[in-house]
Length: 400
Image (tube, rainbow, N blue to C red; front, top):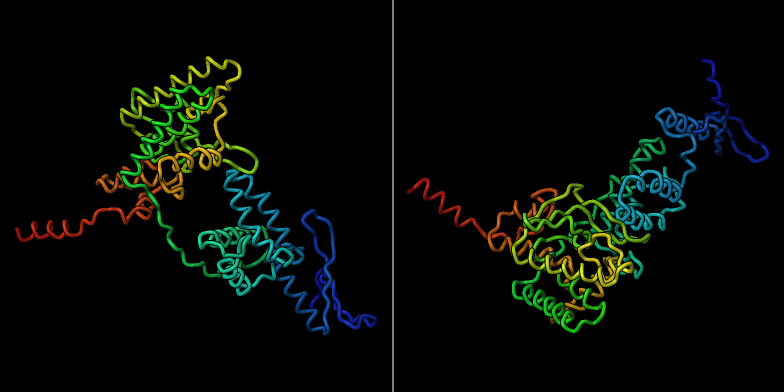
């Protein structure tokens, strides 16, 4: 019989508790010596548990991993690995998705999760998830699954568990959300209404109220002309508008978070340049002149941070406030359904260009999509059908 390894432990029968027990010595993550106890009804059961634990330990599994709950690990993962490496708004998406995981499996042990339980959980979220139990969208449930896979994958890398059961689940079928662009007539009506409201406010000189009307007008005009997102429009500074070159550089975005407004780089991490037309250049110049007049009139009361959309006192706007209070009010006055979001102005810009025959690559560059595939996937239904033209071209080449 071979010599027993140091700390291997010996199974013994506890008469008082009427069970078999065994212990193994190990070093915890801080280097402290601790002992792990195994119990069972038979000596064979105890030895099996001990052997499995030792195998996992040899495979890199941390000695105390079998005591770690999902709730504790999710919190550690979010705080130590996610939050330092992503934007605030992105972290809030992680946090919002993982709250469903904690609510369902918070007290469960990380290494006891099963594929069937996780699949049932994802299916439940689709049917009855959310605060009103009306079910979550397929996109949200896919996000929950994706983030949970990442959470457990990190656990594998640092030795908390051996396999990732979330990977073996099936994601819900993605239902492509329809985009809702304005047509040409609606786009012109919205812009004309915004312009008239701005001119009317200037004519009446309603103290600081006219600045708000001008901001809405120039924001809508920029969005329709460039396809910029609301956060990007609100993130514009005067240094980003190049009047002589007729160009706008998108360098940052204002994002509303639960901790306040965050100013971030564009999604791709790279600034993009968007050529603009003469009339938008003139509108921006007029806007700048009036803003300069506002600064001179208010003096120290104006907080000059260089924002193009600065508000009455230069402090800019919260994206939600601007969208829900300012933009929605404009929709009502223009007689356009309030379901059209500010983001739909971005879709409108892309749609009108594609319907007019603009090369999708140009549209991709203006929108700042990371790839042409993203643009085509979103707007492919708007591309003109060129199959008939292709057939005719082939016939011309081969038949004459």
